Image (cartoon, rainbow, N blue to C red):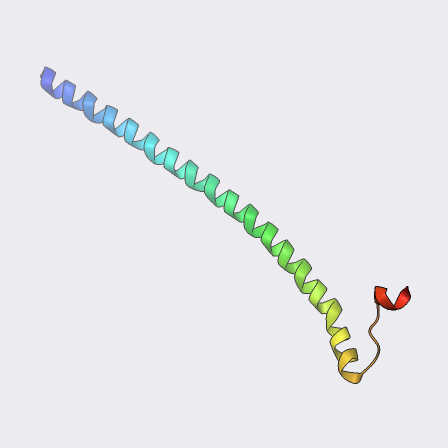
Length: 80
């Protein structure tokens, strides 16, 4: 009878500790997912800024093809 009680207690102990290990792994995975989501959001903001800058400069390409003078700062050697 005592052996059955010992086995039941041992099985319960393994069951309880087995669940905590799974829970800890789930928490670790959730934290990793949150970290990755944050990094992806930052990268998407950077990509959005880069796309906006490209959009601003597309008009300059058409002007260069037509032959208009370059807008912006003049060369330093000619201004001296």
